[in-house]
Length: 193
Image 1: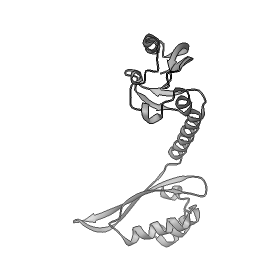
Image 2 (image 1 turned 90 degrees about the vertical axis):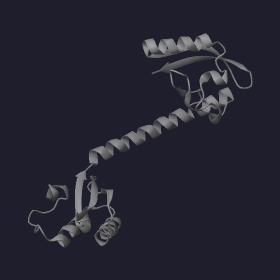
Image 3 (image 1 turned 60 degrees about the vertical axis):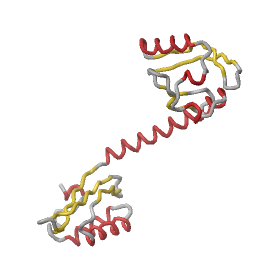
Image 4 (image 1 turned 30 degrees about the vertical axis):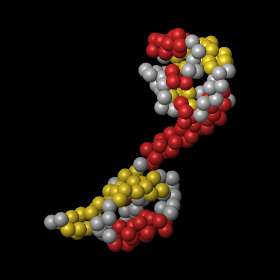
């Protein structure tokens, strides 16, 4: 498997490390960093680490280096390699998706909040909420909706919570809100679990 993982030629002698290392080095994107890390691991047998290595062909290899001990003394090095390309791609796609969501969430001119259903505690608010309500994010995050007195009619919020529990979503519920300044606003609320 090591031969396949690193695309080592089958005619390369099995125990000739310098030739293996030279071949592996040609496949690594950042050859200087890989060489420095490998040298550090060879020079310091007590050092253990796990690192990701990007290859020129687009694959990502995870290298785990541990110390081989005999009678409690460092006697060598054990390496394990794992192709984590698919996991790395999935994590990168997730990070990109989260970044797009965060941008859309924060830049929406509408008031958008993320709250816990059971107690209404604000977990996140966007700039649209700050602009319309007059409350800063620091003033509301971690506090229940009731502390802000935004909902003028508490039965409207109770109805919204009930519908969320029963149907999983609410669309275009008309409600009256009060900004921090005391100004009243009529808005449409949509929410989803």
